[in-house]
Image (tube, rainbow over all chains, first blue to last red; front, side, top):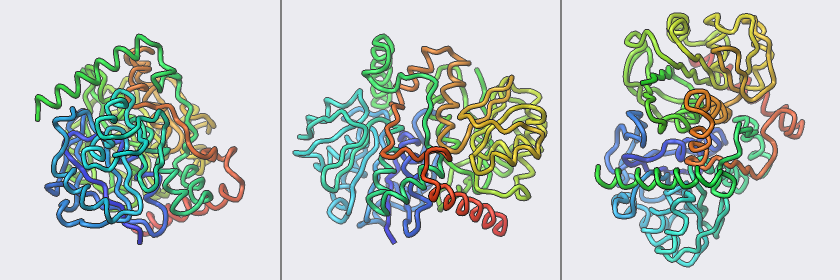
Length: 217
Length: 217
């Protein structure tokens, strides 16, 4: 059995977790564990929704795959328990991965030093502080470290992981199971494609959310 | 405040919930409530993951928007409590919506009679039993009833809803916040695009999952 751990923490973005989960969970021989500093319900970013962590970080010291979700946080408010856990568990993984600003947690754990990586477009340049080379792609593979861009890109990363684990046919089957044939009503999903005034407003809003998260913590 | 209710039930597909949630939750003046026959942790389709329902179905008798998630179930195992609740709450909504096989719950509640609708491609033809006209589109709008195709299409439906609620600029901003600029490594996300042998295998597998769900219930 290939064991996948997903660390939960207060304020995380649930689609960062559920995107890769939904692609991978039905593959045979894979097992997910959802872990947090304190097991139990963990609140997500924008409302009262809670996802349940079934075990403590200290109960999981090695894993085949780790998937780290992001959230709207500032660099000085990154979850210290998760970072410490990542430093330990990364030595045991076949793949260590992140979605969105989960990359900042990998960076803080020293995992991105000297490699290419991506994250949410608003935070892309800040990867340099961890010795990483910011790379404007949806999914960046560097040896056993795979980083994905903002939020919804975790679905694409899940498909990349599925193909590495089980081959292209299995990955395509999972794409079909979740009917991932995207057809958004707008073409505004990247910094390059969205109208500049929307890019500016969203950048301000995301940065404000990070400041709010920082004050609330 | 625009109030959105999402009914939870055992075995639901979490991306059906989290896709629209992630698009809509950050818009100003929207409030989500996650409800179930019994409040508390609700297990999802493929593993031990649980999402927490904060209130009972009986605590919510009217809502502006209802979003019904799907799951791998057979027609004879649809959640009766949710169906009964839908019959009541639908009369109070501005929009009643479903993702994936959530459409079967709408159908059973009589909401799809005489209109066009969509659902997961494996179940599309079965919408006829509810008097609906199966429509092979990612998002189908018919007056106040909006149905989305399989699992990941809830993200696209969320963007349609966002534009109806707050306008196209707000919807595009949310697309950019979740960096929804899809770039799957394969083009196998629909019955038309996937290789026929994969379509056949997935159809068999999804139907087997529905039978398993039926036996387990």
